[in-house]
Image (cartoon, rainbow, N blue to C red; front, side, top):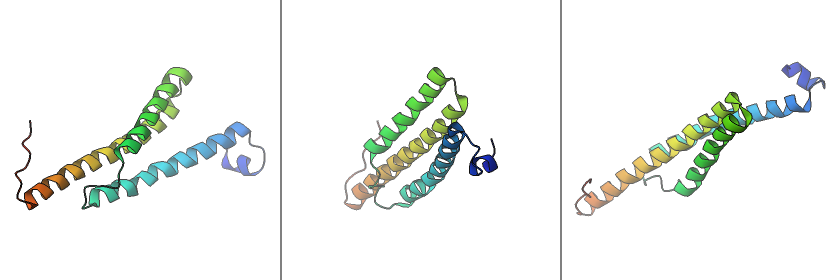
Length: 118
């Protein structure tokens, strides 16, 4: 199935939905980049990043990877959602890193001793 077939009317519904899925997920992978960059540059500990929301997104992507592999035997679908999971994890890691540094700066700035690592 080619792009020409899709636009010339000879595409099946399967091909059209696959093209839409592929395009939407390609754009979604690119859309993670500004979120990761914003979190990394934030000076307030990435306070706008919700751990709950991004953890749910991560879990949804991981469960879709499992579904794709176990129920569908579809490695391409699994790879697509694995990439989404990696991006969600990256956002969570950056937010954690930024919040930890922000808390340390606040404690040191207010004359409080930094918390000792255990």
